[in-house]
Image (tube, rainbow, N blue to C red; front, top):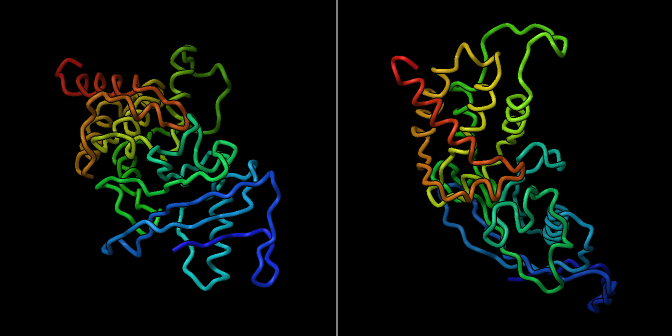
Amino acid sequence: MGYSCLSKIDGDRTVATDKSTMRISLKVWRQTDTQSEGSFRRYTVDGVQPDLSFLEVLDMLNEHLTLQGEVPVEFDHDCREGICGSCGMMINGQAHGPQQRTSVCQLYMRNFKDGDTVTIEPWRATAFPVVKDLVVDRSALDRIVTAGGYVSIKTGAAPDANAVLVNKPDADQAFDYATCIGCGACVAACPNASASLFTAAKISHLALLAQGKPERKQRVVKMTQQMTAEGFGDCSNHGECQSVCPQGISIDAIARMRREYIRAKLPFG
């Protein structure tokens, strides 16, 4: 069943939209709850401006569905500034869509053409059960962090810049790993549904800093054990995770996590 979100309607007659706008066909995954079977439904959105974000187009669709008495499409969002990581979804089979190092909320419609059909579906992973439509439960990632992604020492107020010496390469790398927004795109893109890049980023950025040293060994063991317990798959070095990561986090983090794990398990590590 199709719906059109038109810029102007005069009775039963549709008034042509501006030539600079586009008509986009959305093939959206609809699922009532975790236990229900889902299916794709097709909708048409007219009057799409190239400078609209992808989420704004979903807003247009939902506004029309609401006016028609239909149930709007559920999707996660919060800051819409590429920071919170809550907006993740598959767009035409790619996590976060066709533009690299971009989250869905920062994906603009100028990346698509008039008449395009865009397929939208939720993350697909056993550890990410579908809550409704495009919304999945990503609390498994929170439990991995809870298992060990913290420091217990009292750091007090922010110290002077030179109070704790960290060499620049380590500081830069730690910052790169700390930019992980926990969106789950790495899991969705991995053929094994592995959370290795996420877990490795959380482990590695603390391992590189003095504040993370006290729990260094137990952290990597507890977090990797929790990752397995949540039902995520193993990493087989496909590298798709780093390709879709909106922050561009490298799989070098996974290599570091493995070294940290071996070091933690060796009696002389």
